[in-house]
Length: 117
Length: 117
Image (cartoon, rainbow over all chains, first blue to last red; front, top):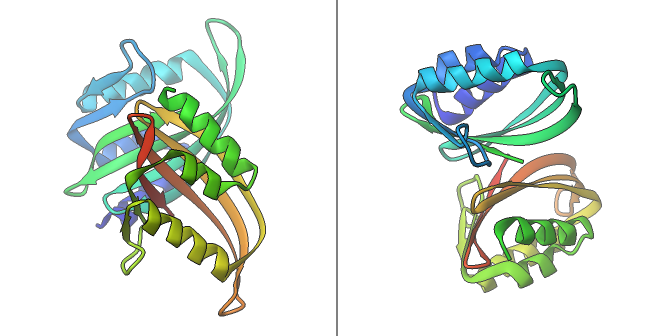
């Protein structure tokens, strides 16, 4: 599969709210996930750590709606735009957010994901 | 100015349909502009070449509407999402398109722009 095919399938899974399955199918063993913030979530390495971040996020947010737009492709990278309406369970704060995920593909797998907001 | 400040100003100029001014203010002398396609527009180097690409584009498209969303920031990079409704003058074809521009900042200037679609 080339980058566009992977990007299309990854995006289709996200659009179907199957983000974890997208990761399970395409993250490389040593995938690196980078957030645009300081702290323990800034950079996680390896499938298990990145999967754990997703589980933490889903456990701590109530999702009212989520949409995925894309993919937007360039060479060995693709971007997705996410829009979410969530309540942070601990604070009760409801937030609407848009962010962009930038994915780098190597040998058919996502080796890096980087989130922009 | 840090990356977010540059990104905010660059985005504000684009939102005001002042794309050329954004480039004039922030492109480095040796900026590289990359399109996700083969051919002469795939990679242009230097302010003059990149400015020329913009001039070519504006000369060859009639713009019905254009919007910019963002910036989305991560480290030394920021992303903008563009939506355009244009007619290609040569063919008369009217197209609606969405794309993402990814900008890399170094020493207060944009050293690379990369477009995804």
